Image (cartoon, rainbow, N blue to C red; front, side, top):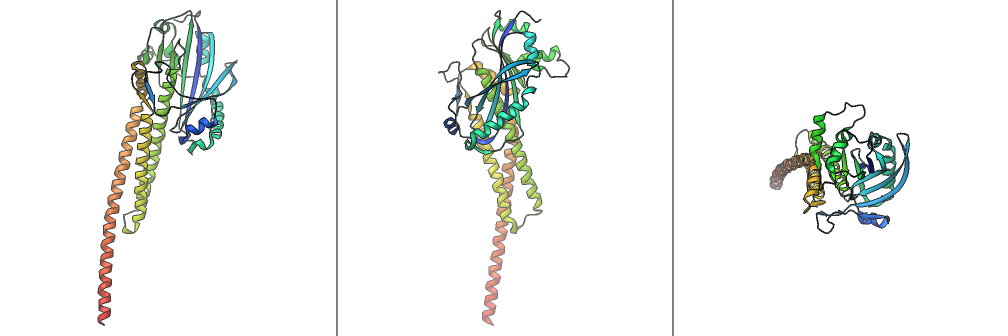
Length: 365
């Protein structure tokens, strides 16, 4: 049951995460952008709870005004840049002393009005970053995520009381025009809820999250963004290996039957297959090693649950399976090349012997 007297203060964070390049030189970005900072984890700052291989860069962008549900709102804008080619754009809608119904109204379909704003901001960032982006490739795959972040409740409430007062399940599962979720569905969603103390709460879903953090720490939103960035890259490279394997397969079929006169073509195909294996193995290792969970059990649980919810492990298995296929294709082509080279050598030997015999007969005559 909702308490109309309860006032909420916090923000709605809307994320769009893009793969924009093969990799990004963060050092060059730092030289160009003065107002930037390296990503860090606030809680237990000196305990090495998390270790970044190369911490992403956070940028503060220009704020703007937006009319939402007939009301003007100030929107703060940020960007996050990851060295493995990912760029995220974040819009923050601050709210202060707002009732639950008003908050739910604002949250409903809040992402749609920003579609064009994200596109414009992305284009501006790509242009500004210039040669810091290596092998620019703005594909069609992107990730979106929304976090309803509360910093203060008036009057104060515990996490348990907040769960009873606020219908978090409906908030996270809301889809415009869809049938409202059942009680069972909402209860299942709450199995992905976490609390470090009685005064904080995290509830995760596939494309949204609810975070109540009176301390104001942005660690959980940052970790969820990081998990989404990992998911995006795995989706991008899964698609890339699909296209590369299809192309190699089409090239093999186009050759009809192996021939000793097509060794060079097969060598090119084998090189492509091996390059695919090496590139994907390198990038997946880079993604896996970009963030290491060490000491903080609570953060580790939230992060691992997010990865599980986003099915990151399934995407990793899919890529590993396709890397194995590419490796087998390389082995097959390599064996075929070796066989044809042997055949070619035999043909050359026969021709040389024939020439010797011919020369011998000519000399006799």
